[in-house]
Image (cartoon, rainbow over all chains, first blue to last red; front, top):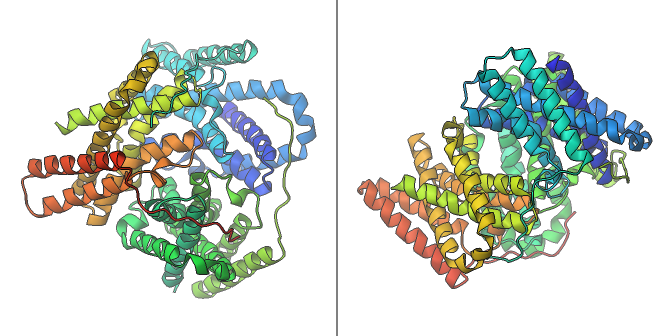
Length: 204
Length: 204
Length: 204
C-alpha cells in the first residue's frame, strides 16, 4: 500500500513542479527535469548522504519515466489545473507524510540512530521541494511557509516511537499517516506556521 | 582520441565558465572554482549518483589544474574573447557530445539499464552548466534555451542503440559524435528549441 | 584540542548562518536547517566527493543538535549580536582554519595526493558558506570578498608540506592555525582581496 501511495505522491510532486517550471517559462525538457528533481530529489539526497546505493531511480528507472509522463500530462492539462488546487494540496500533504515514512524506513533498515531516522525522513520529505526552489531561483518556500518540515519531523518522530513501543507495524504506519496528513491539512487551512526570525542588521 | 577531445572540452567549458564568472565580477579564485565546477561538475554528479568512486578528478587531480590554468588564461585573454564566439560554441558543442558518450560508457561498464545509460550521459553533459548557473544566481539556461539537453539525449540514445546493434565501437562513437555535433550546431544556427510551457497562475 | 575548536567553530558557523536566515525572514525551522547546512555542509560535501562514509553527523548526530541549539540561541540573543561582530569574525576565522586542517586530515588518512589533500581542506572550509549563500539566493560571498578561500588553500598547503618535512605533528598543526588565522584577520582588517575579473560582454 505504501508503494502505491508512494507512486501517487511522486506523480503529484511531479505535477506541482511542472506548474512551477511553467511559471518560469521553461521548455518541455526543463519541465521534465524539474519534475524528476522535485519528486525524486529528496530520496536521492537521503541515499547519497547515507551512502545507500543504488539509488531508487537507478534501480528502477520507471520512476523517472513516471515523472516525465506526469510532467507532460500537466502541460496538456494546464488550463484545468486551477480548479485542482485542493486535490493537489491534499496529494502533496499525503506525499510529504509517505515520503517521510519511507525515508525513516531506509534509515531504520541501516540501523541508524533515532535522530538520523527522523532526519532521514525529513530529508526525504522536503529536499525535493528545496531543489525545485533553488533551480527556480527562489528562496526555498519550506523555510518560511506554513508548517511543512515540522509536519515531517512530527510524523517521523511518531513513527519511530510507535515502532519502539512494539505496536503492530501496519497500525503505526496508518496512524502516523493519518495524524501527519491531518496536521498538514490543518496547517494549510488555518495558516499555521513556525514563528519567524527577522533580523535587519548586516553583521559583515 | 576520446581522451584528447575530453581534455579539450574541459578546457572549453572552463573558459566559458570563466567569462560567466567575469560577468559576475568574481575574483580570480571564484573564476577558478566556477571553471572547475562547470567543467567537472557533470561527471562528479554522475559518479556520486551512481556510487562510482573514486571521482575522475580525485583519481587524476591534473584535471583540476587544467581547469584553473584555462580559467586564468581566459582572464589574460579576455579582450580577444569576443572574436572567438563561434570557435567556443563549436568546442562547447563538441564537449557536450563527448561528455555524453563518456557518461554513457561509465554507466555501461557498471551494467546499468538503457534508461540509466542515457540519463548518465545527459547528466555528464548538462549538469556542469546547471551548477554554473545556480552559483551565478541564474535560472539554468539549459531549461529554456536552444536544443542542448535534447542533443545529449539523442546522442546517448544513438550511441546506446548503435552498440546494441553490434556495430564496431569506433564507428558508433565517431558517427554519434558527428550526428550529435551537427544537431547542436544546427540548433544554434537556426535557433531550434523545445516548445516552452508557460503558466501564469499561482497555485498556492 | 582540534575537536574542541571544531565544536566551537561549528557553533560559530551556525550562529552566523542563523543571522543570515533572519535577514531572509526565515522561520525557526529554516534557521536551524540553514545553520546545520552551513556548519556541516563543507564536511558533508568533502565526504560525499571522497566516498568517505559514514558522514560525521550521521555517525555523531549530536553535531546536528549543537547546530540547532546555537541557531535558536542566536534568535534569543539577536539584539546583542551587533556588538559581537569582531568576536564572530575571529571565531569564523578560527573555524575556517580548523575546518581546513580537519579536511586535510581526512584526505591524508585516505592516502590521497597532495592536490586532493589541499582541495579537501578547502572544500571543508568554504563549501558550507557557499551552500548558505545559494539557499539565501545570493551569489556566494566567497567568490568576490576578502581573502577567504585563499587562506584555506595557504593553510592546507602549509599543513601538508609541514607534515612532509617530518616536523612534529602538533607543532605543524599549531603553527598552521596561527599563520592561517593571522592571515585571515589581516585580510579582514586591511580588506585584502584577490584581484577581480570583470567582463561585460555577453558571449552567447
